[in-house]
Image (cartoon, rainbow, N blue to C red; front, side):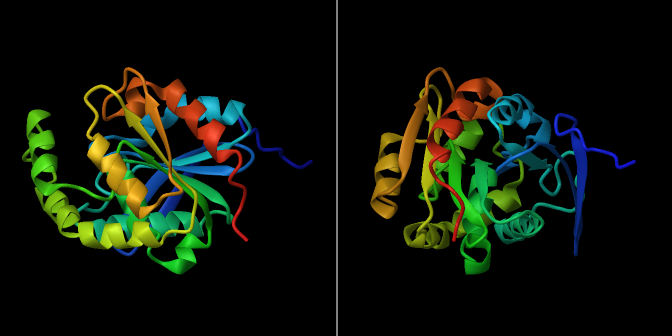
Length: 237
């Protein structure tokens, strides 16, 4: 007798990288959303988001990023995090919607600089992050949140990569969705204007009552925006 997999039960995932082990889980059946958490978070932050997405017919995959949660390795450079994202995408069928919050979004943008990775993605959702980072403002934002001394090496590496992130974003021919909070968000009106100049096809949604960590603060609203916008994206050719 064959054993049917119950899509409502989480299934463990594991990816071996040259210098890390990434651990995560998947749940649901249907088009895939790869969910990439923010720095300092864990994959469990996506659980209430995944619940809404799965009910809407999505399959959700979420890993702890290197140096976070159950995953091993050290998160020192954006390049390493981006290579992990690429490995996650090559482990999935083509046509993923990639949802990246903060660090996760920047790692996704960096990974999409590779045409082979880009070909596997239906579109990108940036959650309260833009590639046009202002270094001074980022440092002030982290300091205000008591995070000035956290992941310093990674933060400085990311800030050094801003020109490359802008270049990749400007060349992306994928659908883009920016979801930002309207209270204490790290994304300003100027940031949004810069993103729209780089990628005029970007859809922008604001989540009322959310700050930077929207998946934690307003998960249902975030999931509904993802469903409403990405449902029309389809799969890449």
